[in-house]
Image (cartoon, rainbow over all chains, first blue to last red):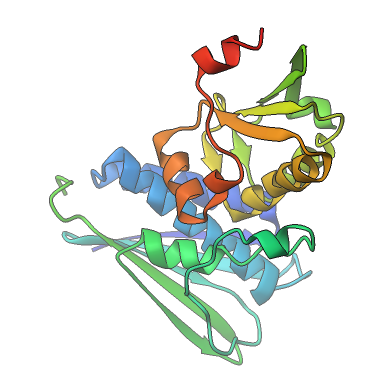
Length: 143
Length: 109
């Protein structure tokens, strides 16, 4: 297994750094282009979630990202230094007519993550939350 | 600021807003939203140069949806990649911002 570590301050500009890393690593393990796009978006949502809800307004706190590459999957662990979360809602969220006027347009992130990766899990405690994403190579790669 | 992410092209009742940033995300969302001005009866968002959109970006784009609906204008998307078509369909964004093809847009010129 190979590990790649990327730690970023809690600032949205650095989400792009992690996203670019995900793209490079997805390409390196032979994911198909569409799966790389899925990985990029899932990682992006997870990072933004960690910034917005894990370490809110605390840019000095780090988001720690670990990519683990093995022969069957790419796994991404995104950890914040927040105070933990309760129940996380991965249910389907869509643009709803009644919410357009109110500006309540967020909340797609966790749904997109769960829909785009093969599996995901959350481990949360009072010292932080780790979201783990996995994409299996299936038939579309040459690891 | 908005000039940095949107280039306007107008003809008749149409404005085509060519999005010039490659990422519609939390970083560019504010500039995208700021470009949501002076819409026309037919407003087209051109995604030809857009390589990435996340949920923060979708939220910014929804400002165009809300503005168009308030004005009774039609809002379309063009040159949307297959991946982004999939994402728009997943969150049902495509219901509020259907795609328009070049040949259909050409009839307005």
